[in-house]
Length: 163
Ligand code: PRP
Ligand code: HPA
Image (tube, rainbow, N blue to C red; front, side):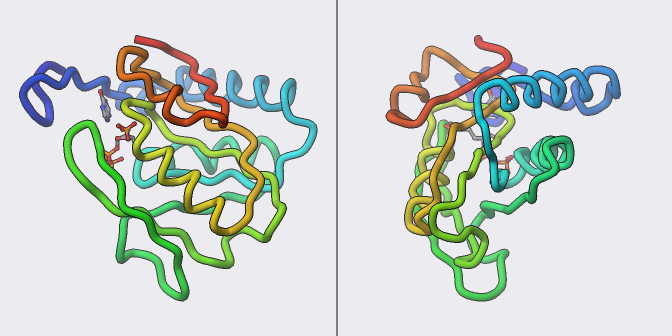
């Protein structure tokens, strides 16, 4: 979609993947294969609000591990850690429950799409404050020209599709 949600943005939409059960299971198959091949042990999958929530729990179930949420500010009860970040088209604040991850746990972060990397960077910062070991960030779509993967270094990014 051109000029959504603002002029100048070409919006890559993941709705067709969710609508097609074969496409959705193919996406989860590819993530599962990648994770099993590259990581000996995963403790948790951390998914980003909102579209990381659509894929993260499916992958977590496949891997037999738990899923935790990195949410937009003000949604999670109890003690939380929070961080502000900038988006391709706006500003936001992300939060995680302080007991979501124990120190040293190996966490894989998932979202639908990597644009500038601001969102995944914020998630990495939150997980670092909880002393998680970040294994990698995985996304379906990577918008290469925005160089999000560079911003996330030294954390690795795995993407299924690049534009
Ligand atoms: C989109 C997308 C990623 C993020 C990518 O979410 O789902 O989370 O932007 O952009 P970045 O790499 O430049 O940070 P959005 O913030 O629009 O929220 P939503 O998932 O709630 O729609
Ligand atoms: N598509 C979906 N979400 C996004 C995009 C996009 O092109 N850019 C930033 N978030």
